Each structure stands twice: as structure tokens, then as C-alpha cells.
Length: 235
Image 1: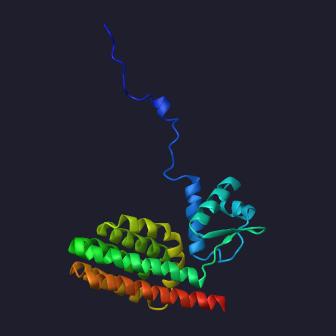
Image 2 (image 1 turned 30 degrees about the vertical axis):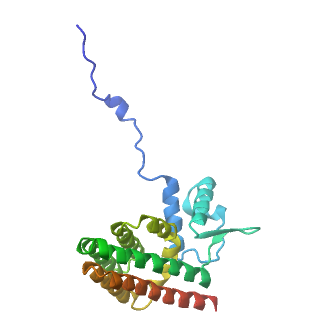
Image 3 (image 1 turned 30 degrees about the horizontal axis):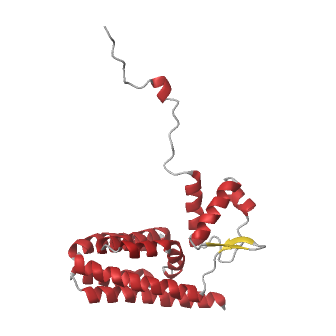
């Protein structure tokens, strides 16, 4: 007679199993460094000394170097000859180019979204806009950035503009670097959401032209604010 083997796990073995963390130490370090740059803990042009970062973050030099290389690919860090890594400085011309790209692609996405989806997309966007307003209400800049990125992800997803979104996604860190400046300006917490609400209303009404214009106007105003701030910093 053959005795069937038990498939129940051996409790002596399972109690020794090491649970894998949801995110690696490298990912956590990358997130912390990215937030520190966006929140201006590290200022544009400031040197990023590996030894100091290791001490502040409590991680190895290998991780710090990997993170700095990743941030360089995002445009948040520049590696200069004879000087090493510094926090990247966005020039006025670079800012104009970033906003020009945003304006064109977000207008395309908003217009296409209105034409293809209408109320269905508007409902999803309205939920996220509510979270953006709530984040502004408690002065949580980090959450404003996160929810605003989610707003545009949904906009491009509903529009089916996958290629355009891949281009915008590649600029997300640099966009948020500029956005972290503009969201702190006077009345942006009111005017920004109002402009986004007009875009949603046009999408709900399936008005392609009005939706595209609302998106372009919103980006143009953000561009004007960002360029004024950058010019002031350069004085």
C-alpha cells in the first residue's frame, strides 16, 4: 500500500523563510533622492558628494552611484567633468521646450479624449481632480505632484495616445521639477484646478476643439509662471 505524500508545508521550514520586501533599497533610495530634489532640499547646481549621501541616506556607495546615474537619465542630475554630480539646472530655453512639448501633446490627448470617450473619461478625470484639490487644501505638494501625474496618465490612456504618453513619461521627472515650482505660486491652487475643470467639462461635452484649447491654455499659463520664476532665480 502506497502512502500519499503530504503537500502541507513544513512549519519548521516556513518560519525561516525571509519575506522579500515590496521595494528594494535601491528603489527606496531613488524615491528619497528624487523627492529631495523636487522639494528643493538639494538646490539646483548643488554638488552631490557620494560620501555625504551615503552617510545621510544610510546606504552603500554602490547604491548611491546607481541612483545618481538613474537621476541623470531623468534629467534631475548632471555629471560634470572634474566636478562630479550636481543637481541639474533647468535653463529658460529647456523649460520652453518642455512646455512646448507638453502643450502640443496634452492638447492632442484632450481633444482625442473628448472625441472618443466624452463622459466616461470625464468621470475618471473628475475623481482625480478632486484628489488634487484635497492635496492642495492640506498643502501636500508631494501628493499634488503624484495626483497631477495620474490625471495626465488617465487623460492619455483614455485618448489611446500611447506613443504620446511615452514621450511625456520620459519627461515626467523634469516636468515635476518645474511643476514643483509653479504649484507653490499664489492662486495656483485655485487657478490650476479651475483650468483642469474646464478641460474636463469640454471632454464631457465631447467638444474636441474646446478640450484641446483648455489643455493648451493650462500648459501655457504654467509655462509663463515657470519661466518668470526661472528668470528671477537667474537675476
